[in-house]
Length: 106
Image 1: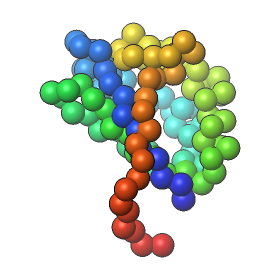
Image 2: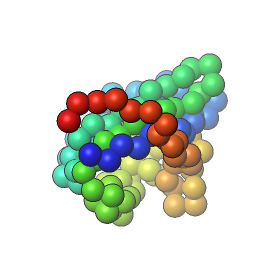
Image 3: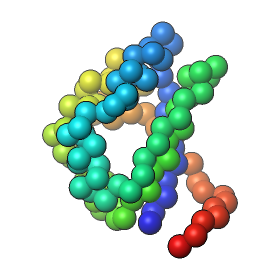
Image 4: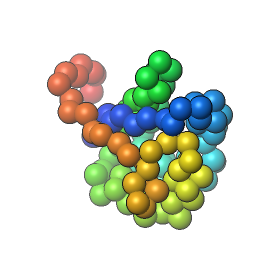
């Protein structure tokens, strides 16, 4: 499994909307994530900084990258764009975090 962690943020005043839209995410988006090899995906929220910490495990880098080109992912990004900083293509502004420690069982 490939592990990635990254941080994003939520615009002030949109915290509740961000959380609400993830409880749950659209079933068709969940299906795309699973079909593209995502084994686990979590997003955590730190209220005092409005920072999001995301952690994902997936099987294949090419499959992970391909998610961004799906119609449902593009619709999700458009659905979320007023709640958080986004890039020109509506993808969330994010910063990948390098892994410095991991312990786990195979």
